[in-house]
Image 1 (cartoon, rainbow, N blue to C red):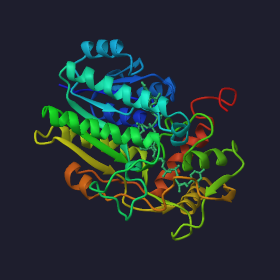
Image 2 (cartoon, rainbow, N blue to C red):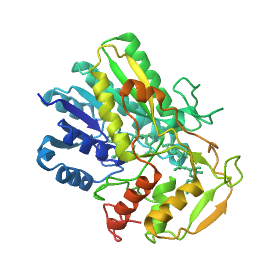
Image 3 (cartoon, protein in one colour):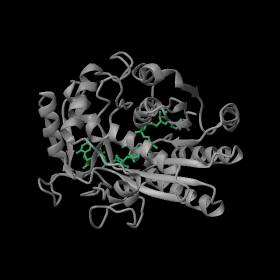
Length: 348
Ligand code: NAD
Ligand code: WQD
């Protein structure tokens, strides 16, 4: 019997890629998303890309905080596990609007956990983030590093991790995997789905992509005086398809009777600077990315990259793609969809 998986936030960037891998992997998938930061077009394309498996996808436009609607979905289907992506993720906005972030991310998650418990579904994979390592004292970051949060968004990830540990302590039937993603980039190789942020992108690669297609004049480089190879910040960029596959590995791990509440880094273990990433994108796209050097962005760490050993050993998962493939696939998506899922008229 095919397993039934509920994916919250499944219309979003990482969610849509994961839903596609789930469908092609033979899972039946139900998506709950309020489309606050995504488009239903992404799911139509996932359905098409999934071919014969496309019929195993269903979608509910529901906010996670709508408990009654969520209960109805759990009553209709008995889920084997939930992958929980839904949440707001813009660091700067979270500083301006902390209550929005606490309300959406925390209440959304608590409501989900309550409904799961009520329906006897106690298997969860949660989207945490490398942001919980703050400015790490050393690299690579292992899962045992001390945790901190530099902004309300990061605090929602920390709080949810703690909530998960507490509910597992209170009831050992819960099996929970907390996945700490590093910097997801790239797109599905088909070029049909990818990242489509609303407004001015906060993250490096969506900004670079919009410069390449002529939507923005230049990339502002936040700081070139760090103690790194070329002075710019170093991060662990991971192909979104590798990340999606990490979720399938986590679901397989949940079938392991011994697991309790476990945390895994999902990264490549390699650090790449801003300038190296820009150069790789220029190579992949044949486009020149004009740069404007600026001061450091407040709250930014210098060097962050993952220790990947735990995921490799215990999830039997390892990232396959390097920055060349990430940039190639991101450019393929960008050149086919310069305005994402929208059009010049609907997109600012
Ligand atoms: P995204 O914004 O593309 O996807 C999140 C989805 O959740 C969106 O489709 C949005 O509409 C939906 N959503 C938000 N609040 C909701 C609610 N209350 N009810 C129902 N749906 C809701 O973001 P993403 O990049 O795909 O990130 C997915 C998850 O991974 C998030 O939890 C994010 O914090 C986490 N994460 C992302 C990154 C990254 O750099 N992209 C890194 C680490 C962790
Ligand atoms: C990468 C590098 C910037 C934009 C963020 C969140 C984190 C996680 C992943 C969700 C840094 C530099 C960026 C630009 C630049 N998300 N940069 N010009 O900051 O590592 O992590 O996304 O959990 O929580 O904080 O990613 O892509 O914003 O920045 O020079 O216009 O690119 O300074 O060195 P970051 P990023």
